[in-house]
Image 1 (cartoon, rainbow, N blue to C red):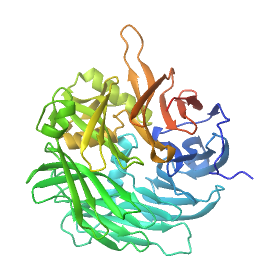
Image 2 (cartoon, rainbow, N blue to C red; image 1 turned 90 degrees about the vertical axis):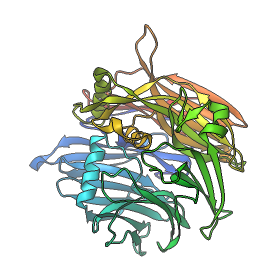
Image 3 (spheres, rainbow, N blue to C red; image 1 turned 120 degrees about the vertical axis):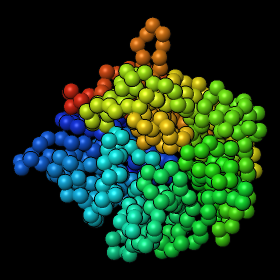
Length: 518
């Protein structure tokens, strides 16, 4: 009778716990979503050692009420990593990597947690380096490599060996009897090329493709490439620039009804380096089905945005610093909102930066050793940028919160603001957790988690939510008192969040729903 991802009314489970959790990465606890709806959760962790030196790994799948639906046991070496997992409305796909075998494996399960099929492949040397770097940063990533296409299949984005290094986007259908496809960079390309999937639906796939001469180069060119989701054939390609400006793309939105693509990004002086130079403002571009730009709106830091945030110089806003945009969301009435968090580079006290890096490493299952820079990134408030249907900025809402500080690796202090933001994101240093839309697109809610510092009291972990409905903002916050090794807050249904606590010494994971107003 139980169906893995069936919708269930009301949350019945209040708290659950899992024992014998020997090692757990904070990124291996995730929600399972179908569109914006939470349909379940999964936990993947290292359990007991077995004969022959291998380990038993456990994969537990829960429904939306945290009732256990399935428990899978995987026997592998101690070097097994869960890279990602995604649900597309019909199948759940797990992407695993074995460092010892140097192979990745995709495992597909149906909605009853029954294995449908698996695919294995050898991982390129460049890809192995990137996985190792990701593991050292706590297992997080600036962009997903496994992308679901609703009720159709999955995209697996990998780095491959060309004349230098290139990319491959491979489609795996839900029905294993159907034929998949792949789209890849040219093997003879003299450039190092890489790709990120920004948007994927049943008809179109939107990719951001970058190219540069050397791995450590801070100069790159970008194109937006769209593919036919059924065949993988290229539909059109757009260069991320205009006759007047250079541009970098941050996010996209595809309007299925109009067949129009909206691109959000920053713009720069012509000839600027979009990786390390400061931007002039925010550009929003509209593209039609033929790949033609039919509208571009430039909102400058110095004039348009300064009306709401004060003066800026070279992209840096006075008293605020720089803004990193986590997501752009379109509401049902056609207005857009950009969810940003401010950051700036500051001089670091070695003890402070070292402590933060050590805590991040411990939460990710590392040793806590640190190799910090003399600089750090100070993360401050949220800024929600409001745009009308014509993409004109109409306001900026400031949401104050406690300061967070993130240590930088040696040498990183000399990078530009764009790279620094990506380093902080990869380390999980921003407080933003996730964004959720509700009420058929009439409401959005931004969730975050940070530590509040209160004079004369012990610092405390808090979960906050910022929701927007009918032009009004509602802010709620709850304390998360705990002595856990690390905590994580996940989205849930019916105005709740799921609070996760991992106690390494006790080898225990606790889960509890908490009510919030949004």
